[in-house]
Image 1 (spheres, rainbow, N blue to C red):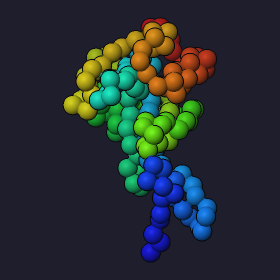
Image 2 (cartoon, rainbow, N blue to C red; image 1 turned 30 degrees about the vertical axis):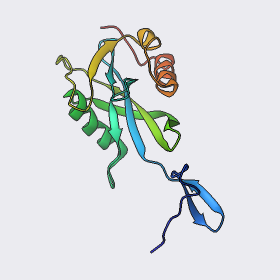
Image 3 (cartoon, rainbow, N blue to C red; image 1 turned 180 degrees about the vertical axis):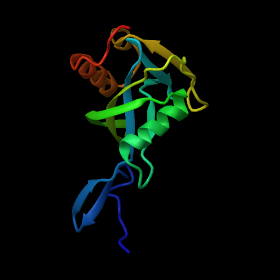
Image 4 (tube, helix red, strand yellow; image 1 turned 180 degrees about the horizontal axis):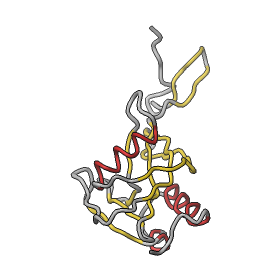
Length: 155
């Protein structure tokens, strides 16, 4: 059994693979830019930031399947998860970094989303409105890229 050592207590995300060689060991967070009637669902988290729906990848889980599961849990929607299109490393806190993999997704149903106990609030906004909210820049960049790709349409 290999024991991994962190480079320092302040950098627990950097682990030693070989003597003197450190690399990232990060949790993976799957997020979705969901288009629904030209709107985008956003959730307010425990840090009072707005975020895209999604969550952690479970061991052995396919990313798209895991994201569909998270969307069901967080919004009560059976969304169609498309391709991953944006990634970034989110420095949640100085000692906690997360790899965020963002997918395009759609929901074609007519059920208004409801949010789970994991979040404080849910809003449905246009992509333009999302830019003014307190949200990490990586999420805003993903939303802008989704707009550039023509992901949002008005029904």
